[in-house]
Image 1 (cartoon, rainbow, N blue to C red):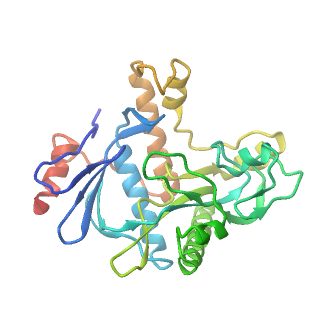
Image 2 (cartoon, rainbow, N blue to C red):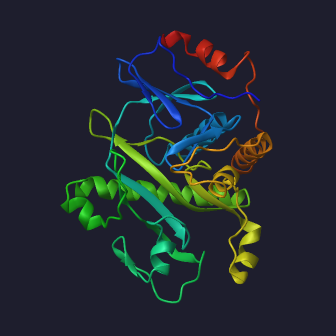
Length: 313
């Protein structure tokens, strides 16, 4: 298996290692972002999934190019299938999640809050009597605080975002307009591929001029929930979750065998890793309509990236 487990190159400046991405800040204001194949869950790295980094980078590339008329994004160049050169931004302290359905499993998801009896959340009110996975009257934004120090994200209302000084009123209005337009484009394009874009998260930052710019990734299998459209009507009537790109084989396998937050992670079977890789590739092909072509042009993915980034050393 060809795996990119790390991409630390001493020849590149200002190194920062994230859970999945390796980052380097160049003196001229550009940032090199390398997507590895690491799989993060339970606040730790579980394993590596072959071609995951290439899938995520190329899926985001597809969407960045398809939405650049809606709002500016951070992309400057793609010197390698796992690498994007982007503008270095100051990330805004609010995470923007757009939802089109009453769905989700996290503590901040509208379905979790709804099942707990809450009807007023994120500055809006939902009616009684809604069912799991029901389409919302219109897509909504459910913003949360973005805790950079490892704390827990907390739900916010638009009024709180402005009153707490997290964003100005103008910034919030711009982010809202961008996010809803991006989501509408995503749903429209996904529908043509037989998919439902259920919800997604966006990350925005500002450049040296204060311009709001879309950063990180967009509409990838890691940042978004997709359902297979033809499965939705029957699944909804039966109260079941619609078919999706279920990449959580590894997460579920680990959780069944230990406390993943405190215990040593057991050795994960190769077959499970390979199946997860196939799901990522299937998701890329379903979302973009393109055939996934792995770049095996060098002895290892790391060697290929080193060659392609030589100009930046």
